[in-house]
Length: 110
Image 1 (cartoon, one colour):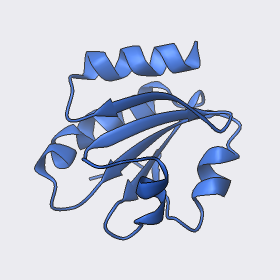
Image 2 (cartoon, one colour):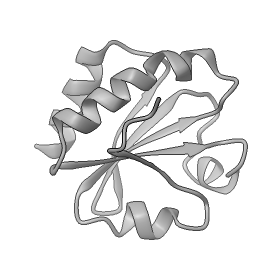
Image 3 (cartoon, rainbow, N blue to C red):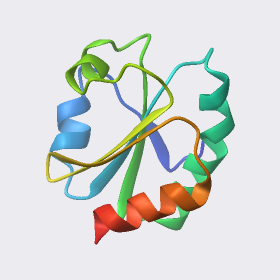
Image 4 (spheres, rainbow, N blue to C red):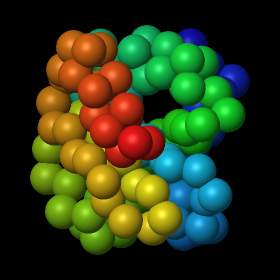
């Protein structure tokens, strides 16, 4: 069950929701069939709660929205990007421990 703090974006609203956001944005590129994506989903929800107000957290289904992953060179999932002021600050590929995600978020928010 996704957290109410995590929103879903599409190719159509990505620029508005992510690139024009006044906060740093953690984007989770995922697909329903991806077991590692499902494995890290609870961690993504936890981060959304822990960084509420400082970090916007969104998910984008790569099957339904192929343009955005292609634009950012996403070839494998799960793939997490942290974008701040329209620029990619961090990229994490694969299912990683929460401590790795926290370090990346803290670095990007720095």
